[in-house]
Image (cartoon, rainbow, N blue to C red; front, side):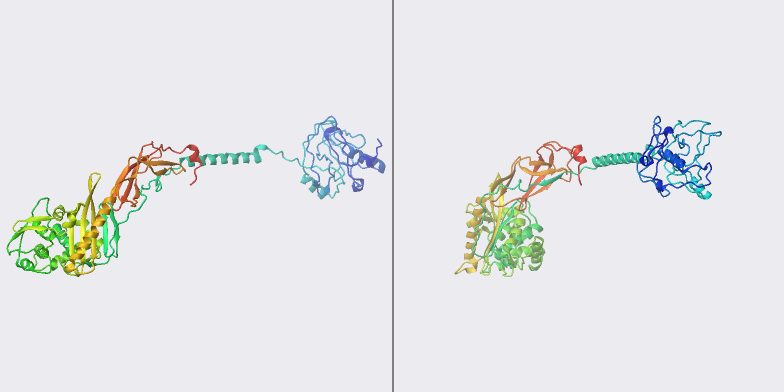
Length: 590
C-alpha cells in the first residue's frame, strides 16, 4: 500500500473498531527508544510507512462513533493537537496495526506494536482471547490518567510525538444535579413570594373613609351687595343681633364716661344677688334718710318726695332706678344689698361682675354713673346688655314708657322718644352728663319667621356743638343716631337659606381615590344680614363611616354659625359607597 504520505497528513481516515488516530507532521515525530520492546532492525522506509498507515487509520465504516470529539486546541502535557483531528485515547480499544490496520491478540490477548504512542514503546491491547477489532467502541475519555504519566516518568521513558494518550473517562453530566433544578427551585420560591405578597396586600386593613368639607359647594348664598350701617360722625358705637353676635362697630373703643348707663350694671348685680320671678314684687326696701337727702340735689337725676321709713318693693325700686334714672335710688339699692353705710362694697361687686363678663375696658366708681371716672366702651356695654336682658324682670321694667308707683305716683321713661317710635325698641337705658355727653344702650326687636329677634346697640361720647346743659342735647343726638341704626338693621335682617336640600356639602374619600358626594338632607335656613358669610364645620359624632353604605346613609351634621348662632343640618351620602375591588386592593400603594 504505497500512498503519498503528504496527502494524508491531517486527515481522518475511517477504520475498523471505532478508533481514531491523528496524524502529525513528520518533522514533529520522534523515534521510539532503541530498546523499545518488539523493535527490530527494519528499514526506515518500512517503519515510516507503518507509522503513516497507523496515522491514516480512521474510524471503522461499519461502527458509529459515539465518543465526543475533543475540543480544538486541547493541550495534553504540552502537545497540542491540530484542530479537526480526532484522537483515540482509550487504551482498552482496538489498536490498528501498521500495514493492514488490524491486530490479532496472541495467547493472553495482549499485543505489542511499534508506534502505538506509549512512552515505553509498547502498545497494549486487551482482547477477549483472539477477538478481532470489531468490538464495541470504548467509552469516551477526556483526559490522561495521571498514573500513566507518573509511571512513564518513573521509567524514564519518552513518549513519541503524535502518539495517542490514554485518559480517564469524563463523568457524564446529569440534568438532575445541574443548573436546571436550581432554576426550578428559584422559580418556585419566586412564585411563593408573589403569592405571599398578594395575600398580604389584599388582607391589609382598609383605610377609614374620610369626609372632606367642600367649602366651595356649601358656600352661603349671600346678597349681591354688602351691608353697611349708618354710623355717627364721631364717638363710638357697636351693634349686635342675638344669634349673630356683633355685626358692626364704629370708632375707637377707648374708655369714656358712662353717665347713667352705669345703672345697667347696678340692676344686673341686684338681680343676680336677688333674682325675681315673673310678676314677683320682691322684698320691701326701706327708704333711709340719705336717700331722702340725695333726692333734693339739683344737678342730677333723682326721685323726689320720698320720706324716711317708706317701703317699696324691689320691683318698684328697679322701676324708679331705670325709668326716670334716680341716682338716689341707685345708692340706696347699693347700701341695701351690702348692708353697709356706703356704696364702696357694692361698687366692688360691680367691677367684679364687669371682669367676669369680659368688660376689659370698664371701671365703675359709683352705682349711679354720675362720677366722670366711671368709664366703659360701646363694645363692653353690649356684653352687659346681652347678660342683663336674660332677666325677665329687667326686660319687663325697661320696656315701660312710664309706670305707676304705689305710694309715690307716676314716673316717665327718659327714652320715650324711641320707645314710642314704632321701631320695636324696648329699653334699655339713657345717660347724659357734661363729661359724657349723650350715651344710650338700646334693645329692639324684629319678628322673623314667627320669632322676635333681639337687636342690641350702644352709642357713647355723642357731643353736640353749642349749649348742652348736663348733656341733655347730646342725649337727643345719641337717640337720633341710634334710631337710624335700628331702622337699618331691622330692614336688612331676614331669613336666608344658606344651604338647600341636595346641595353637595362635601365628599367621602375611601382612600383609593374614589370620592362619594355628600349632600344636605334638608334646607338650612337662618336669620342673617346681607354680607355676613356663615362659617361651616362638620360633626361626624365621633363615629367612623363604614367601608360600604347605601345612598342616604347619615354621614354627620353640617354645622354653620354666624356670630354666636349655630345651626345644623343632616348630611347624607348622595350615592352608594362601595368597598374597593380585588384589583384596587392588589394595586394599592401606601
